Length: 398
Image (cartoon, rainbow, N blue to C red):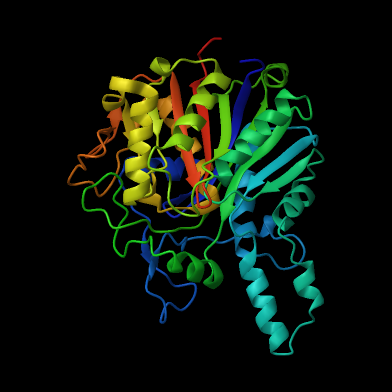
């Protein structure tokens, strides 16, 4: 491991709380954010529940100029919270974001208006996929490099890895990094067609699981080089010591039976961090609650950690949040960082009957208190993309 990357700010907008503190408190309290969809009609759709954010209103100070798509509106408060939390006084800040669908709901609105003769087609051309990054740069006057990744549900974690690589390469000292997505008719129709969704709850690693449930939200971290954080007197919340990204090259939706991609991405992240597997104290898993993903992920943990895999505490935040798509990896990284800071691992909801094919030490029933130095956070996505982050306690030394 070379240069260390400090996390000095965090922001979150989730189905169980708007702000990192509220999100974390509700995660520990076992609050579930799955509820009936109200934003659009589900009359002709098979799945009608989601992690919809219903108690959200964009602060007037963040409204800016012109209409906003839902995803960008969810992203702005998380970015604002992270920047304020980090107490930055520089505008040389990069932006690395990940999303599945971007501002597609705004495109839907414009398309309907255009077809009805109420808008010009020019409006559709102006709705660019990277508009959220443009809006962040303009809103907060961030003048560093910027990019928007779309790597399915590994996008948020991949964006954090991208930010870390920029800092290590000297392209930026500070980067705002994370993921975001919003529910829309377009994305819901497509996700429903995959037939991977449950109708009641997300039950990771449970024998009677029936699928995942998708959600909306945003999670943002401020990353900066160790030297930059020290120079401005900022103590990190944690370190991003390792990151890796790969793909399965196997199938559009199903992971390979040998878990090769997940094994390799976890191994690569550990190597990037300069850590051996025995130094990992906790794993925040992708944990979608689908049979293929859960079994594949459990198999990968066994391959990476050997016999210790059955005793490393594991948690799956999607049981509470639902699957927040492009935001998932970033929100799970925030949860992992909070676990490092507090020595507390949130429990996995809705788990009643262990799956014998998933021999992991899943934290259930109540949060678990344990001393943590290093955490592995895993993400995966449709199309076979995998991402992994190694996060370390602020007091660890290299």
